[in-house]
Image (cartoon, rainbow, N blue to C red; front, side):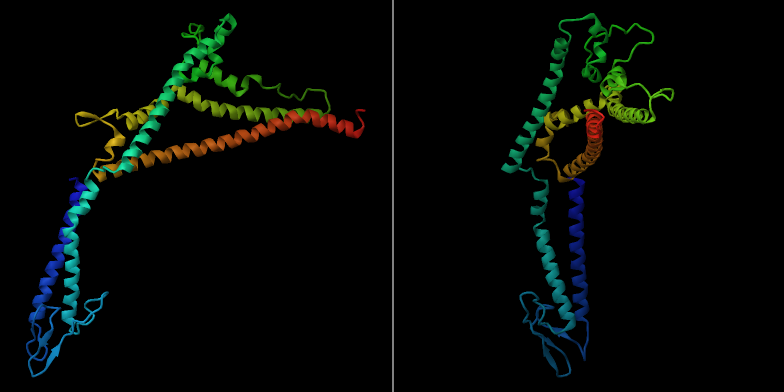
Length: 343
């Protein structure tokens, strides 16, 4: 039994003992209480039929109660309190008597069909994801070979600057033909410059140009829009570059966690354990702690997803800007036709 479950048992037993002690103390107090003489309770305290008092007077404590309040008919105040205490104590003892059943529901292995089916489905899904990732990684070598076939000296020299696989640590040409140069080029950095459009920026505007101010301003606006989009592309690609320089450790750690959950690549005692299967037999306290750990990781992933969604929205805005720039030439022609400059 885990520490968590033992603490529950100790709390319930201590609570029960407390109620029993209170009941005993009040019973003793009731037996020594005097009204006009010595009150002698007959029968069971709190549930008796007649309470006789000296002095020639006798009173009958009615035990007629209701289903919701069995002590409603008790007229003597002390006996009424004792009646309630007896009822609560009985209820507490009943709950304690059922305590083994409650505890077993928490610590016994889960053998339900629903859990078994969920374990199988979740394990299959995770296995499929791992299989697809492994197959995709192996396929890159063939794709790179196709990219380099037929081989060309001009392409071979810069092939690593052109392939996305460079960011994944899979060079199209390994080792890089320029590795002996000083300084040696950085294929991953060259790739993000190519992919982000930094190498195809338009000519920067100059104040020495002799065109009209309207045309110079139009070109300056065009240059600003294209450059803004290119620098954003650089920012997005730099995240992949950072992963590459870190040995793609984030992807490896995620793969390790996925393997841990799916294939049970961790040691439980002296045997290999499958986490999805172990959840059904572990103490509930251990499972709750593991759930909290996964919840914290889910928060991290949700934060990353939110950032990605913002970046996607920004990229869409810039795409719209580039579309507007592409339509600018048509707009200029249409304006000239409308104003009669072009017939």
